[in-house]
Image (tube, rainbow, N blue to C red; front, side, top):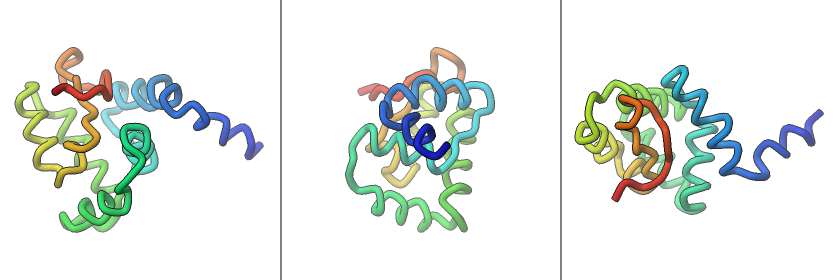
Length: 115
């Protein structure tokens, strides 16, 4: 039923913490939809700017760009290297910091800013 799907996103923080976080910890992958849910949750602005910035890095689709960022974050062995991945993400991850990930060796455990 379509209306039940929308109810999952009504409490966006709950959706991110209950579904997206555990899925990322298990698979080290995140969909473009879920990534933009994070952007909306952190700061509901500049989504088009971030999408253009990600596509300008040579990816054919947002899904591929987000896959690459998620892979790079999950593969980074230290907090410092994850910070470098964030900084190299064209500003997208810098504005919507989604790692405090050294707790679980490269796995997303929180979207809270680390600064």
